[in-house]
Length: 430
Image 1 (cartoon, rainbow, N blue to C red):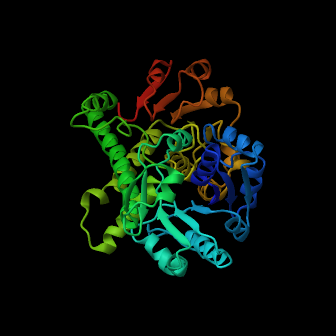
Image 2 (image 1 turned 180 degrees about the vertical axis):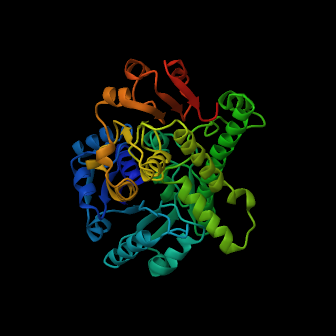
Image 3 (image 1 turned 60 degrees about the horizontal axis):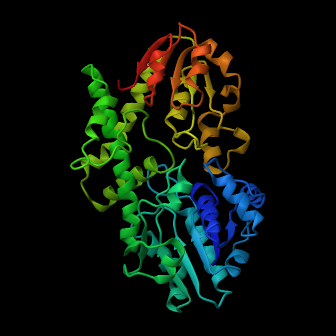
């Protein structure tokens, strides 16, 4: 099938590459010409395991191209998948301006087309959004019988998005009435079918559950530490019960949750609940709990005294370059506002390759990031009095070789080997 994919960020570029791997011919579409040119070179616009190889093979097989022209993309394809961002408003609600823009452009392009077309909306949107988009932009196209609209939430974890696409843990599709549409399953595979609103809501339900698990594990970890108990051991014990408890995913005391999905989606659903008049005290407590955990980390760092602070791992998740809502970005921002000397080492982060919302957020929060990024890890470790380890971005042997006895290591994600270093050691929940 010939498919146009709108939005070439974390979801769109993975979707495009994996569909090309399945033999489809893909036209990527984005307003950012840098992303378009990068994809046309067979390179990934973001850091994601396995993505570069897939894009390079897709280009070599002539199964992938990219453009900024919506009209050409729609005219030359049989289906369109919309993966543009839906960021947060200042109020915490959802900003749908980008998806509205894309839907309007696709609608205008469809006016010039008489062949049947399939539209899959994949951007994360609150219940009722797909129906609103259809009413506003596609009502006549759907009535003519030439356009089929479905909602297809994504469940891709950064760092393992390619594997998640190939082997989804959950596949859901939404239609106007919840009835299956064969052409959609031909494209994305066998799925559970719900009405549009149900398919939209299940994405938020999943992300809220993940956020709740992270917050729960961190709170239990903090309480356990006050009792002299290792929070990691406690949670790993809890997770051995596969009958009453669920799984160890997210149930690991450590980093506050961050990234492009959980904070945004938790915030948006809280606003949605308020507007709907629903009373949800447990759900409303998730973001404050996460902030309390981030505040604890900042107090721990501040309590280590003066001197240089080295942060190992800046992105919200290892092996990605996504800095959106990263707890370590927030930590660095707060420390810099206090006038502290902060250095950062993360080999995946290349400021010259950051794009879109990722670049915008870090430019606002750490405007001179390049000044704080270090390449000489040996010198940075030797001069640091506090080392905050968010990810294992270097080997324990490298740390051991260069760290000094005067330093304090703060372990955020539970790397047991750090406790063996010849310096002071603190675990955030253990």
